[in-house]
Image 1 (cartoon, one colour):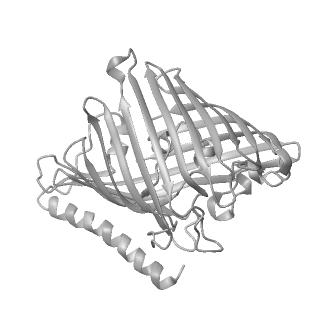
Image 2 (tube, rainbow, N blue to C red):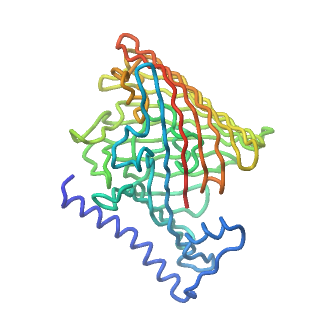
Image 3 (cartoon, rainbow, N blue to C red):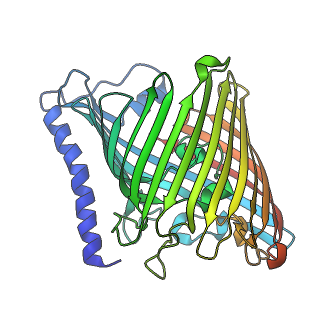
Amino acid sequence: MNIMRSNKWVTFALGMQGVAMAAAVAGVAEIPAIRQDPAGTAYDRIWGMSTLYKDETNPLLQEFAIQGQLQTQYAYGSDDTGHFGSGDMLDSCRWGDVEVRRFRLGLRARMWHSLKFHSLVDVNPDFSPTFYKGIAEMYLSYSQGDAFAFSVGKAELKFTREQEISSKEILTFERSQLVNQFYGGELTGAWVSGKGIAGGLLYELGVYGNDRHDEWTDFDGGAMILGKVGYNYTLSTPFDLAQVELHYLHNTDPGWSEGAGSLASPKYGDCVAVSNDLTEGRFALMTEAFWGDGEVGRPDVFGVSVMPSWSLTKELQAVGLFELAWSDGDNGVFLPTRYEAKSPGAGDKAGDRLGSAYLGLNWYLYGHKLKLMSGVKYTYLDGGSGGGDFDGWSGWVGLRLGF
């Protein structure tokens, strides 16, 4: 990326954070300098320190806080041809053989009882060549109720129900393979959303530039148009939660890229996902079906995923993720690129059908703000005529911290 352009966007990003900081200074000018720790557990007091100011009676600034994520994981897997795992990742994203999956810091603020500011920037794990790596998310949202919110800025494209769940709260180490194949990245755009309409309707409509950058989208490529509609039908069921959603994603320029070294937009013109969530007591079940209209040399792909979870105690949770994916043509489904595709015998890393089964155990020390995770996964890929067969196991242990 051009250095002058990069510096320009870094300056703008820091300026956006400065807006929130300036509002904070104005809002707390007459507040005593020593903030009182909240009552509660030691965890409450420690995490409460991230909230620098909170006063619902202040008309200008209601809350100002720092936020962040640190997610680390060790992975080890094998198939008939050899071993693979987190030790195969680039040195710049590892601490030894432990991958630093996400390392982010930012600010959040609530202002004028209707405006929210949210930011997270990626941090280089080894703080080299710089501390700052890029903008993960930075946007403003305006809302005066659940029925309508308008947001503008940079955010993760949340197509599919799995992708809607924040990386702070996902129950597995990685999402389903087709969810990752459809992943558009963190993009700049504008979107409107709402929920609780007419008893349970929800919606979202957003337009984003499809060119992916560490900072702001340049809008040199096409557009990603994302629409969602759903219904929360809990009241007509015996469940604690029952909700169905339909997502539609259109890419006007599938596969667009600035060239070598640039992340390409997904090579699917149209994608559809249908999901259903059920929760009752300690049990939850999320099911989802996917379809993608392949372009730029890709065949259509289809898939289903099932994610059950069971809270064994208040701290321990068992979770599973079972998926099947197949393509309407040769080599439409890819091995997960993070680990399995690094197997010595992964071949062309693509096939016609993929199946996987994941079983994990999560230990919540402080909810999703501090948890330990472990899991084991079996993955099978039928390479078809391309010869990309894979049959292997992998296991993980990891830490998730967020504030």
